Image (tube, rainbow, N blue to C red; front, side):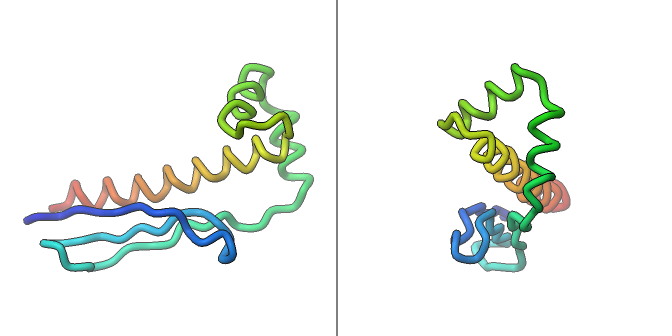
Length: 95
């Protein structure tokens, strides 16, 4: 079998995140949407207060920002990508 996949950014107007398309011999056979679900501001503040200074610095660097909300957004975006990648890996391993 010739399986492959594609992960692309989701339209920000639809809530950001990622789209996954699964292909079998170049034919689309499935996929999924891995959005960033809305979250209450206190969730981000709790997250920020729970991570170490090194983790804060890491996520601020990833976000290219000094704003904690941007760091949280970067964290969530990568988390959603990892979920899409895990689904793709599962698809590829069951060929």
